[in-house]
Image: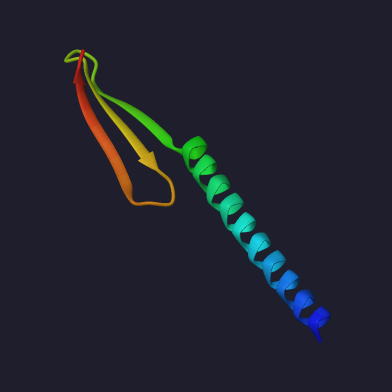
Amino acid sequence: MQSLVIVVVVVVVVVVVVVVVVVVVVVVVAVVVEVVVAVVVEVVVEEKLGVVIFCLCMTGRIFCCCSIYVV
């Protein structure tokens, strides 16, 4: 009976560890992909004015950070 309890405890611990590792790996991969795929768009509105709109958009989220630079 004791050996059965030990086996069950070991199995539970192994399953928990595997789940935690998988979750961590998935999160890390998602963050890396998001950073790599981050779209950087530069739009020159008017060359004569030298105004540049710089947008950084993160994939997976509706998030764009736009800055206007006067060159």
